Length: 309
Image (cartoon, rainbow, N blue to C red; front, side, top):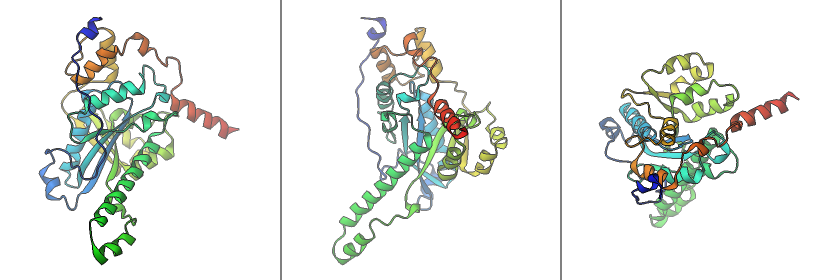
């Protein structure tokens, strides 16, 4: 038995909890959000990414975003969703989606407001972030209709019959607002040629909005100022600064594992156990997709070539 496996302590596995509108998260909701609960906009946070592997910083981003939105007194965060990218993204060093999904499950097993969604990870082709947002927005609408039908069926008599006629009438204001949660590097990547479509950026920011977590050394205000698209949508971008120095990254975690170094207190313990048991993140896995063009670059360059003909 290898040293890595010998260090393993098995941890319990729990299935993902379903996304429900009735679940309001833990007790850390700010006083201002609770006081204005009837007038607050309900929010669901969605984080897309590789999560290769998921780290404590990924989880902390949700906490920082929720605190910020609650402190405005205008929002009430109901749920956080983690959506790992599929294998077709072709990022260098990306391990199989089934492993990344399992690690996320273990990382959030003690959280009462974070959940995992595997739809994106199961797609045969890479899915643009804006399409993932649309998918989850549609899910929220469907859940609203289901909840409304359930409430209607609990009523009796003539009032119930009248309301059943309007059960599928949706007031957009009653549906939680979906926001993209990301790090400052994502906001900066909007300026990388052939990585994002202009219309996708406009829809992500204009329709959904974004909560962007940055370190104090980053200057995302300058990034917004220097981009016409970001400047036009600046009111839909919530910038949140992480004042506690935290330079954790999945890249550094993988490097530490390749060198046999400890990653305790950087990655949740159940995730560490899983990595050691399956012997993930060695030099062989880091070379995966080496020399392969990242899916967005390949797709958008092909589209540009066809349009130029």
